[in-house]
Image 1 (tube, helix red, strand yellow):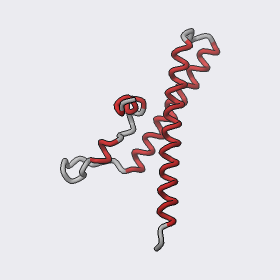
Image 2: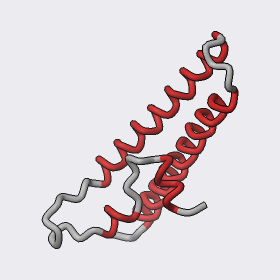
Image 3: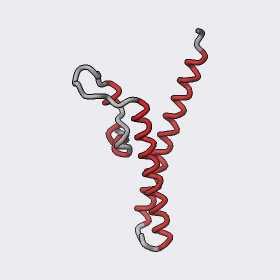
Image 4: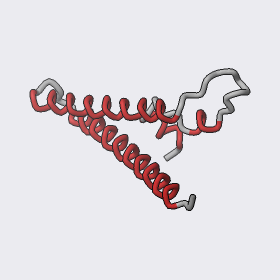
Length: 102
């Protein structure tokens, strides 16, 4: 899957563009890691809420196309899996730093 396709799932997730941007060259402020992470978590929450809402509408009979519901659920699942993978990498990096001698 190309990176652009993954970025379309998480529009708040800036990926490599912000990570490689030089803060002094263009004059525009690069968002902090914490702000980017918070924005990504909010996007995951929004996708989870959309999936839950579409499941409720399917159960109520408001939506007849099950494909819509499955796509919303899969988007939310993929976004959550990616968020957990990032969290695990952050924890691994923290643990590695803590093992370094002072």
